[in-house]
Image (tube, rainbow, N blue to C red; front, side):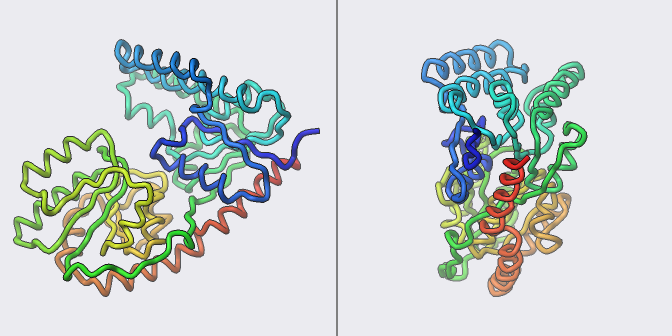
Length: 375
């Protein structure tokens, strides 16, 4: 008989990757306590397999830099051996894949398993198209490949309605799709009284330092504020990424070292965000925005560029159009109404607590798991 009380979470992203996917399955491990939960990631493949996969990936990156299929082959290879190593000999009924590649890897080994797949990002073909310079033929091949990956799932969970809209062309007909928003542990990320900084406005932003997350906008904002002789502020950028060095150079070029700090990756970013006056999210496209709800849970007022699934978190309050973003953010900082920030932060907190708390999130996942086990 299958072990109906056991769930295996499977993900391409390993536990040390600094992504929302890792945050998501780590929370599942911690909070889904009415089932036995096992997690398998690409890092669970045997040592020799990981070395071979890494050598293959580096070789292809060097000689075939625009081959997006390398990514899918790399993870399919690792997950096949990781699953065989950790669960292939056990009779598991239900799997929770964290991406369609993981779902396909599961189906190759467990033909009769019930597979739930969470879609964390917008259309994955579109994501690869952004990362690689793909021609129409390659895009067509990727779409065919990912439709095949998606066809292996019995139920989809999307982290926002925006993800459903962007990904639905890849979903097979007749497969149920649920929207379960990401959540945070509001009790763990407790609101803290803002530290006094002699009236200085502390601005935070957290995320991968890249073009899409668009932190360059805050560096440009800092330059504008200094040019206007407004010096009573500090911008703290939390995260690492491909643009770290270029942002560091830009900060030095404009003599902004006293005003913009690159903090790197921080394990608990909300501890820094909680001590800030305002959190400004600059991403130009976002499936959801984990750090936004972490900032709200930390008691900090959030404003963001209207993009992707962010409107599903903030509603209309705190959203600004991309074309007006820098001027709107500048206006907020120059006004510097810290009491108003705290009032708005409290309002955002109360609304978010009802929608994004971990208790509701856990219950929705448990219900989906039970339905999958009884199906």
